Every structure is written in structure tokens, then in C-alpha cells.
Length: 533
Image (cartoon, rainbow, N blue to C red; front, side, top):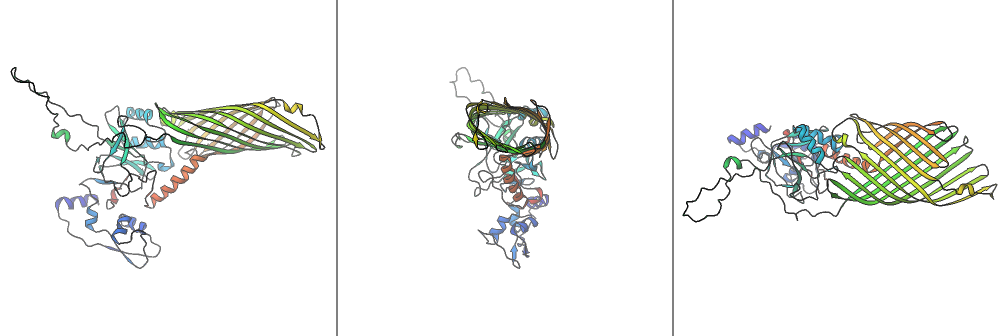
């Protein structure tokens, strides 16, 4: 289709065609009709005076774009318009991680291994950086710029298309289109686009050569240096690179980085005991670019509940622990994160069996740390792609206990002893398969002097590690024995993001405009869709 239109335009043999029509049938939509005829549904609405609601009725005729309208979509012979139509951003392409998508895009652009290693070390974890200056890599892409290759999402994979000419629609874009520039060791230059996170090739700026001025005669007065001259060969077909002033993009004070993980564990048969527990850990950070990563300050929270039926159901032990306090995190561009929290909390414990009851109220101060190394995943490695190490401690500041038997108070001094709570473990992602990630976790929990437990879990999660399930054993280190267990966990922030972006990707598949961030999603038109604007 594209080559035929190009030939017609080049040789001037195209005449004036009348607008074809489409008979609207019951159940059809404007977007579906536009996709059927490979035309832009918004342009069809304008052509048929259906704006702003674009409502159609069965039995009516709909005028389609004629040749004059189609001709406008061919920017130059052999080029495809690069418009903001919201159909194929790389962000969440195929429900894969940002790191995996980037690797696919770099492969599609035929980048060398040396160039890929450079990008793995320098791209930010959270997407293209925005609070940077022109000297640090900020680039504005003006309309009318020729781009040789653009990566976009097709069938869940990153592919390339080009050459393209940018045709930004100023009515639908509230601000210019920006990207982050990377000059690679090979000499090539690529841009990582904001919002959509598409990768595009970008011309490396050529410094004009200045011929040396002729030597002046001995008696002639000195003249100012000659003006730099750019030859036609050097200047030809090089798009203008417009670098916005530093005041174009207002520097944000910080970016919000929320975290939320929750889950449950169950032990259906522990020598006559049955236990269930639920946990929630959350944090909200205000992060800002510092050096080769981000540093954030915020507040963290840890909450857990447990309910244990003991002695074959004749007794019950249950309780809750809640702690919160200031937190700090560091996200490195090299592929690791570190997190620390100072916690102030309260724990309630209760036990009952027959006519006996006791309760403990514990105030404590504690701390937790976590380290996550995902550099192997950034490097595209499937085996041992990510390792997480965590530890926490809680030290009681006060303990209050009561006990009764047959409703009569009894001695509770033994229960008022302080007990230090320790927890530590290692979570290892073992292998990234196409549709799942396999993981293992080894942990240790102690509430001295009452209990010491080691645990082992083996499990599986989805490829984005949004949710996972596991099975394993708990080992009682004080009294001996082991108990089988199983559990599940979910990352609440990822769960919301996947649900939201998945909905947008469904919109994309229907041809609707997806709005990300500022309302702009930069995507190329597919080869057979050149009739769109």
C-alpha cells in the first residue's frame, strides 16, 4: 500500500477520487469500522460531522477518507508518519519487565554487545529520567524530524520500523515530546522516549569542520577568524536537534515511590496445631535523583496477624503486631536497591485453653533492612536473576501481662519477661522462564526465649513477579519436629500497575487512544496503516 501511494505521488498520476462510503450495520462501532478500512477514526468523525461524541446509527452511510485525505498521510516517499496515536508503547509490552523489554528493543536495533553493556549500566530503573538538563541528556524531538528506526510493541514483542518522520499533533499533546539521549561506545546515539519508553535511533551531532583561515600578508591588518562553514554533504538530511532551555521542564522536588506487599501462610498440621498468619508491609518514599541512582526518604509500616489452634484445637493463641516509622531507600542504576526502616510498634498476644487465659501487651522499638540485587536480570540472565536479603529485629521497651484461671487472677510474672524478636532470610529467584519465575526462600524466626523456627519455601510466580505461591516446611529448633506449610504473596503496587496498564493495552488493541502520564503515547503507524494521520 505504501509503495503504491508513493509512486502515484512521485509521478503525479493520481487523480481526484470521490469519497467511498460504508454502510453501517447493527453492532458496528466507529473504531471497528476505521480498523476495517485502515483509517483514523477521529478523522472519520470529523469528515462526517459527528464531533464531539462520534455517534453512529445502523442503516446510515459513513463517508470514508478519499485519496486527498489518504495522500496527506504520506510524508515523503518511503517514509511513515510517526504520530501520537496511542497504539503500541513499549511500556509493559507483552506484560514483561522493563529490563526484558529494553533488551528486546536493543536487539531489534542491532546494538552491539558493548553498547548494550553501556546501556545496562546507565539506564535508570524507573524509566527515562526527566529531572535532567540538556547537558545530562535531555532532548526535545521537534515535529518534522526524520528518524531511521523506531522500536514499538507488536504481538507482545519489541520490533522496529522506519524510516519515519515525526508528525506530532499539537492539538492532542500538552507539551513537546522529550527523550533521554545516550551516546554509545560505538558512536551511535539512541533516545529513550518519555511516557511510552520507545527506543529510537538519533543522529549523532556532527561538529562542522572549520577550514583554517588563509595566512594574511605580512603588511595586512589582522582579521577576525572566519565563520565556520558546513558543507552540503555534512548538512544534508541531518534533522535539527533542538535542546530546550533548562527552564522548559520544571524540576520536580521528588517522585513518589509507593511499596505494598501482602500475603498469607498456613500450616494445616503441626503436631496437632493449625496456624494461619497474614502480613502486610508498606512504605511511601519521596525519591530524587542523586548521583548514579535515586535516594528516597519516607515512612514505612509492618503489620501482621496470627491465629494458632493448639493441642488438637483445645487451645488458641492469637495476636497482632503493628509497627511504623521513618524509612530510607537507595535505588542504584547498577541494578540494586537497599531499604532501611526504624520502627516503633505494639504487639498484642493472647492464649486461652479450657478455663485458663493470659494476655501480653508489648511496646517495642526495632529496625528492618533489605537488599535487592537484580543486576543479573538487567544483564538478561535467566539463571539466578535476582537475590533479596532481609532482616529485622524488635526489642521490647515495656511488657504488661495478665493471667487468670477459672476467672481468678494468677501469677503472670513469667509472662512479663522481655523477648527479643529476630527475623532474617534470603529470597532467591532461580530461573526466569517465559511464563513464570521459579524461586526459593530460606528464613529464620526467633522470639527468644519462647521459640526458634527455621523455614524453607519453594515456589513460582508470574513473569512480572506480581504474585507468587509457595510450599515448604517449618522446623522447630527448640523442641524438634517439622510442619508442612504453604502460602502466597502479592505486590500490591505491581498489581495495580498491571491492571491499569493491561486495561490500556486492551484499549490499544481496540484502536483507542491510550493516555499515559501527560496524555501522549508516541507510537509509529504500522506499514498497512499509513492512511491514518
